[in-house]
Image 1 (tube, one colour):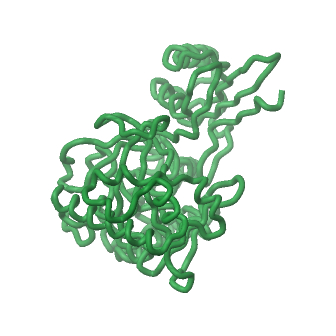
Image 2: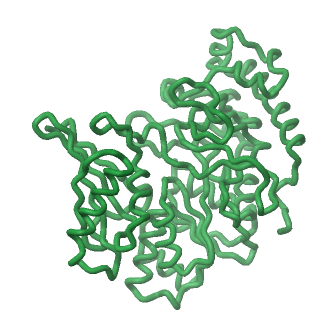
Image 3: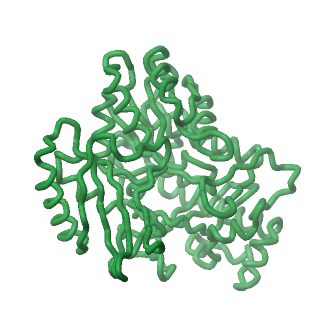
Length: 429
């Protein structure tokens, strides 16, 4: 692959760039950010104390609460006259996390996203249908910025609007779909339902923003007739989507280590985990001007993958995001992540990847019900044995009892964005 956008850097070169960027960031926030200067002073650290990459651990963590407390424009480290844009997180409760951008920040983000399209093997001939949210959220604008910088044709449809989505797929012959995994699944169902398989030209999908299972992925790849699909990572706090992408080797997600540092910590102690162990991803930006991030706790659970990737790209890799530490719920004393249920579903060909967990409390006791759709074409007469089998497997793997219900294909609500997997009604006894 001819790399126009992805730099070919050695580990030593990346480490040098990271140290230089870390020193710059520490000086920048000390001079320009009242928030960070106060934090540094509280723990007795100054920019001059950063001499090696290991000194990163001397710096304080930053949290989502810090961003909310600093509302409306937290972490601001440039004069407001230098801010050319703001974006807000997709959070649905309380105050949004709002981040500011200088023109340089926008330019860095655009280059970073162009790398993702390059890593996915796209060319300027591709037509990229962007089906994620525009507006305050970073998704739509990020996908479009990167696409235009890369040089492919952007079809900025946004989420929803199924009739227009199908029209673009058939009339404009989009070759790459950019969406959440839930939206890709929904589009696949619509393409099948309307018998459009032979009328579309999709080859690839770039998807992200929510945890997915291999089963879910196979389902939309088959329904849309894709050659390949790629998991993308990113968050509003760190520019937006495009901070890393899975390559064609499908062995983890390459992240742009020349632009930010990744640490993996134990979410409870804040200490680094052993190499290769799963923990919470913490990120530090190296070139961000308006809203720099120092040791920002993402709550995303992953691990750093060792060694060189078979695809030949030298950028380091993290494993796919396995869930969020704040998505975890406690049921009868057991810590459960929704993705664990999705993983159990992998063993059942007659069930689809769509599921919903409902938690209730009756007579002082917690109950968990899991509703799953039957796979298209599977026999309804098998529902009872499937439900019993799934309940047994959940108990075996997750050590809890659950009530399992099998639904018809398409019966669970569909989402254009992130699907809500858990409904916790335990406060409403």
